[in-house]
Image (tube, rainbow, N blue to C red; front, top):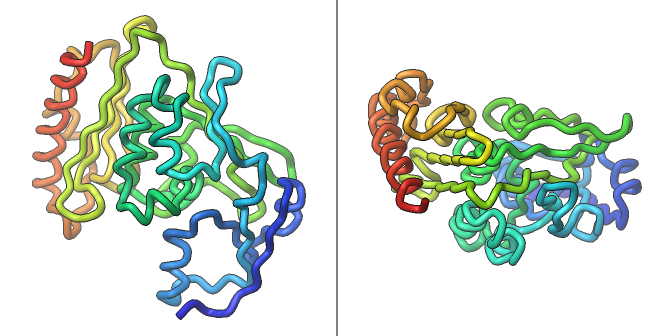
Length: 266
């Protein structure tokens, strides 16, 4: 059973910012929050429903970036025409997040704020070089996703702040990106995102699910990647999905597969 709580439903961002606090917790899908409440791990005084705030929704192209509102659901992003056309790797990732319940209920902003170490979405967004915008009492601030997801289940967000949107730089036509993951349970053992911007001469490799946070490496070209050397730098967290040695091995295999898949997509 859920513990008793009050429910607030602000209709504009300014109203929501006046309400939220340590004990008045914002939520959209609540896929992780409600589980924590049922388990007795979290007992907020109130939940602040963000679903009715138009300023936190929508997908648009603006200032050479795809801007995604924080309350957009996974299943909607997986089929959104802008995301499918300009960010096909992200569309594929969103279509495979968790299970059908999570995709139908969970939001991209909630996923990032929960800072799940095994998040497919965070791994993909770090590869794209995405930023998040936060709103709070002191105004707005922006930071890269890899800084926002600061630790396991810890995002760099104050209790009086809201994640407003995610800005993903528009990839060049010559940019290719792939995401591969290995999983035997609902959450992956290893997730590998690889993006190659051939015009800009940059390559971003991100390993997720292995350790406490997503890990980023940058190269000029996929040919510079040495999978064995990359995996030696990992700091795996042993858990039910595998030991440190096993995770390093699987990560190396999937880095090689990602490099091959990127070449095949060229």
